[in-house]
Length: 209
Image 1 (cartoon, rainbow, N blue to C red):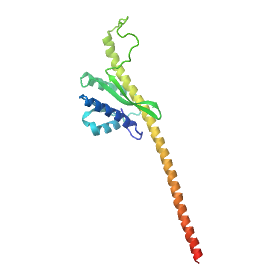
Image 2 (tube, one colour; image 1 turned 180 degrees about the vertical axis):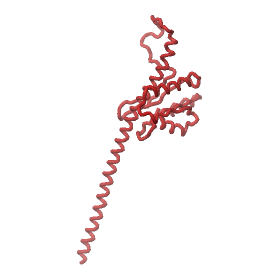
Image 3 (cartoon, one colour; image 1 turned 60 degrees about the vertical axis):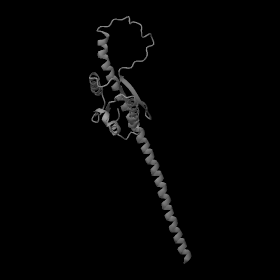
Image 4 (cartoon, rainbow, N blue to C red; image 1 turned 120 degrees about the vertical axis):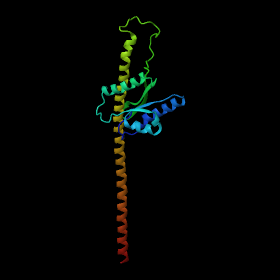
C-alpha cells in the first residue's frame, strides 16, 4: 500500500524497500511471489524490477476519503484469490503512523490469521458450546477480520502519508528560505563589490587630475 501521489519524502520508497526485501527473501527460498498493489507510486517502483510478479492493482486516485467499502472491495479480491488457490500466505506492507515526523514501515500477515499467544492453556477444552459450529462462526468472522485489517492499514497509511507530506513541505519551505537568504547575501556582496570598484575608479580619476 502506497500513495497515489508523490511529494511526501521517503514515504513510498520506505514501503517499497521493505516489500522488495521480503520478495528477495522469499524468492531465494524458492517460493513464488505475487504482488497486488494499492497506490500508483508503489506500482511504478515495483514495475521496474518485478513487473512479472504484479497480478493486480487497486486504483484509489479518485477516492477523496478512504472508507470501509474500499477495504471490502480489496478484501473480496484477496479472499477470492485465496479460495482459488492462487496463494497460501498474504502480507500487507504499509506505513504505520507514529507521529507527524515518524512513520514506521510495517509488514503484517493477514492470511492465514495470526493470533497472539493465549495466556491460559490453549489445550484446555472450552466449557462453552457454540451454535452454529465453530467452523461456521470462523467462516463468517475471518473475512470480516481480513477486511478490518486491510481497512486499518488503509487508515494508518493515509495518516502516515499526510504526516510525511507535511514534513516534506515543511522541509522544502525551510530549504527554500535558506536558499533565498544565501542568494540575498551573495547579491548584496556582489552589489557592494561593484559599488566599491566604482568608488575606486572615481577616486583614482580624481587623483590623476
